[in-house]
Image 1 (cartoon, chains in turn green, brown):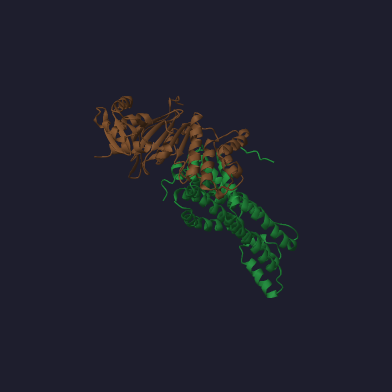
Image 2 (tube, rainbow over the protein chains, first blue to last red):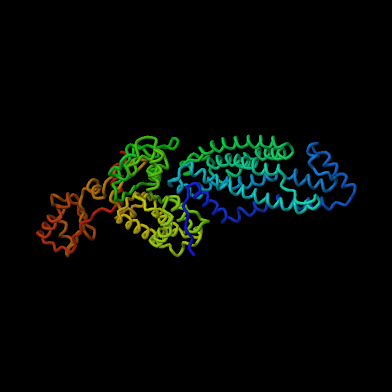
Length: 278
Length: 314
């Protein structure tokens, strides 16, 4: 059976081809998927199972104390139960939140760092530079090709994490309870602009440096503060009210849009040809 | 949009620098439609920069570039130029993790080939360049020759009006190089306009309708091989042989003979090609029984070095 080639906007054509290459590069995406599985599935499963199986009365009291040390309004949200069940709830709903941002950010950063400088390194930047795609379309294509793996990881991770939490903690709390409203806000409103913001920085770097190794190093350096901020923001989104979450998300969207617009100027035909790289 | 001019490419006083390095300096030449123009020059002469300026991948810092009658500096016209150009860069610039088919389909989509035509174009191009059997394989496993053929197939998929070939046979074995040059010759016969860069003189031999000799970013000379021969190789050279070669020495005294040398056969440089019959008459009159009279045009290599000698700084 023959496959009918699809035609689309140049930016989508570029993104589709980049994603196809990424799928072929198992040595690249497999370690990233392992990291995602570790953080979204394996570690939460391990910790929640341990918490759920606590029999020691002293340890159960200590766990209650942990919940007692959470902010007052948060304690109110933790179901009335004390001990291991409430500690499991707190761990599942509040303490793993930063991972939801860090892992997709890492995946998108790794893909984004290579995307433009990679074209230059293998010489295919020359092909793109001589193509009818505009510089804006090339940038958008590269952006999509980096965003999609990050969002895909976030969505899959979220799905798997929800399953883990509901299957392990749910029975102790009277049924499936995850995701909570705040988690939906985090995943749909706060996480997307943070990934986009990080990618804006990374693509601007990838367009300017002369090698993939340099891009990787510079991107790691540039995104580290963003990851720290994201860590704090994701915790705040869950610990504080919905108003704060929406405000933080709104600010992040503004920052992301501005950064993406600025970064779009970093991609030029001359840079695809290797001119002006540092 | 500006109307299309008679030339496929017209450069006038073009200048381009990279930092302090002057890559192209006051470059002026035209590529007539339907011809093969060869940019000849040593490495670093500025040939690749010219290709990039022609498609608008690089901006000129001075002068004017017109490609297919359009200005590559104008966004919309630049896009149109690139859609109508096929470029084979010095490095084939392929996607190694993808198959040959994927590479070609990517180019077809990017160069806006109608989806209904893509499969037939891919099959035709692959057949033409002899890579049909390898299309399903990942390009990372291709030989250098196959990569060059795939790059050529990719450049012609969208049926460009202008083909720009930058050292298309670089790194190829002689057999593959010959095949690639044959394919370029075929495309030229189909009426395509071709601008080819090379520093290999043998490559240009027989292909070029026009030669532009470049050095240090400048066009030293340009013209058809015949014009250049007339200009830089004024002597018509004839190889002579006879039953008794010593009789040929009589040619030395003839007024229209510029130079004479006998070493086995005789090499005679004449004022003009039209002097050949007079030379034969004179030698026969002197009693020579000629066994060989072979007028010889200079090879492009001889011509190239003659031009460089002529233009070398004193």
